[in-house]
Length: 177
Image (cartoon, rainbow, N blue to C red; front, side):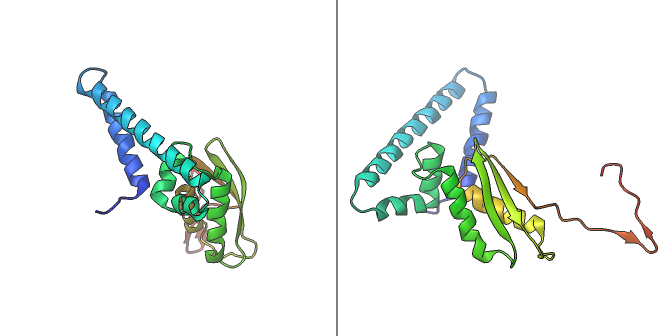
């Protein structure tokens, strides 16, 4: 049996719950919402017990293996049970990205508070770096490590721009610019 990406599963759950909200408070809609709440409470309690058992175990790698699994880690984060702070997980994600970054590019977490992260990206002398690609890669790494992060601001990155010139004349500035 194949396990889907936890982010996609969470999106399907959100869609289903939004659909239930539209169905009103009567009949099957109300029962389905109560069922969803009960299931969430049940597996949240189960995960809580797994973490407590792993914490008291003399085998420290058990906890590391649990939080190293993307599905378990996302469920732990969903229930506020992840043993690492959001900051620690984002720092770890950025550290894992550093070896793959273009030469001269560095990334540092400035803050991660209330679902919002600020990351400073330094690109001195790295003119060939495509900021849009870098932004997408960093966003994905951060969201995988800390799915509770709702927004990320990248200081030091700008959107990639393509300048279009007509022979002999620059194009006029767009009124939307």
